[in-house]
Length: 350
Image (cartoon, one colour):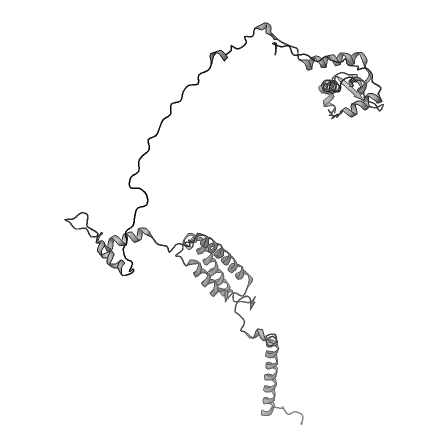
């Protein structure tokens, strides 16, 4: 084409351009619709709401309106909670219907959260309402029936001359005869016509008579019959301290073992434990053997300096007692064998 001239598109060029635009638009629509056309189950129309469309650029006024509506429903639900729990109330159904209308316009998560809160509160109230429901709420009401029956028989109509009107039972009989064709029969009362009342018998309790021959006077005790004895434990502890004072230092087992009596061996350990507890006897095991010796009890200053009390649990049985006698060759007890005290007949000890 010669230079300097301006080319203008003709009609055929415009139609070709329009056809190409339609082709691109159809191609784009087919690509967008392809996820639904590939699966035959997705041929249904998608539901409206947040689940099908998420629009972060939704109109702000519409979002404010949705939030306001949801907050209003939440407030009404909390304020009218007791009314909604009544069996004849349809407030919960109204809330659900209104929420179904609003969810169609929800396109953001904030509004969806408010919808979830409303649904949770409505569900909780629904559970409470179901628990309060009675299966026999529509059961027969005796009081209401009697009230209507008295009205039907003319009991509500009081004349000036007659204070207590007579009830028209014949009218009730005529109405009841339309519903049954049963022939009236005679019924018999179950049980006797008269009952003899039994007389209650009152028994006389006789006083218990004791045989005076079998009764004996209690023994009269005088001051001479009561012998006060010294505390045996304290006396034995002092005795062991005196013996240890003479024989210290001495091996622990050679001191407490009594080859003649296992029971007194256990008693010797018991009495010695008081002296160890009070800090009057020291047990030294640096040599590998427990050695007993007397010592001065610790003072408060010793405890303040860091002295700590320690406890030791010692167990002994018959087998160990015999082995200790053989190992240490104990033939005589360091602590003399104590004689068992015989109980004097007729004497009291306090």
